[in-house]
Amino acid sequence: MQIQLQKHTLALRHTFSISRESHDFQDTLIVGLNLNGHTGFGEATSNPYYKITVESMMSEIEAVQKEIEAYDFSDPVTFHDFLKAKGLSNFALCAMDLAAHDLYGKLKGKPLYELWGTQKDRYPLTNYTIGIAPVDEMVSKMIEMPWPIYKIKLGTEDDVAIVRELRTHTDAIFRIDANCAWTAEETIQNAPLLKELGVEFLEQPLKADDWEGMEKVVHQSVLPIIADESCIVEADVEKCAMHFNGINIKLTKCGGLTPALRMIRKGKELGLKVMVGCMTESTVGISAIAQLLPQLDYVDMDGALLLKKDIAKGVEIQENGKVIFPELAGSGVTLI
Image (cartoon, rainbow, N blue to C red; front, side, top):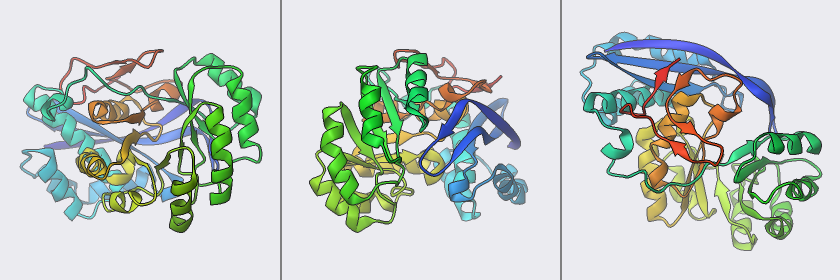
């Protein structure tokens, strides 16, 4: 097996702002795994919040590259165990694991969702994210991209007023993501006002470690609460079940599709709503997420839609949110 590592800097259509940061570009690592004439592709983006860079991921992988290339690849799960034992970070693990799954599907000649025993006849629609900006800019972004579901990033002094203004311009479903910017009291007070404005749920309103506050919120909020920053790895799912109504799984954070599949199963066993989110990936990462769609209640896979220019072909998302799955096996990815 041969490894290819590529760094790409993805330019965004608009400045993307959340409660703690803003950026116009997104660095990402693309991994290619070549075996028997097939190439599987995986991706993981850099992230300052988790102190991850493309260079740090590349250094991790290059340190064990010879061992990886000598590995007798048979399936992604045992390969993930092998990589995890080498001490790779979850972000580097994700890039490798996504590539391994894509490669495995291509070797088997089937898409991943089919190998997992699911069908693509029913699946949730992705939301389209509107980052924090002056409200007229947020309205302009919605008008530019008419969509059935919007995720609205909040964490300002005028959050409810922003949603009230946005509501005058669309009948779409709203989801609110405060990225840890609210207190328990703010969340409980805002929830009924936002529910009246057509908000479906609130995502991670409190700081990731404010478990006491989240337990209060989950019992008093009139809107469902979905964990994001509080649900990073498999061990977090059970704890989240006592403090949230659902979980948002990020492949980069948990280490790829292999642990994500286990987190989905565990979440469902515990009665949680299950969502998978993205980290402004290209179509490489988004196509991997798409393979999970039949297993999900909600999905946030708009990363490639936020880019000025994509670097890959795979899953296509139409303006009504409908997904066109690629004919190619695996996650169906090819680089442009």
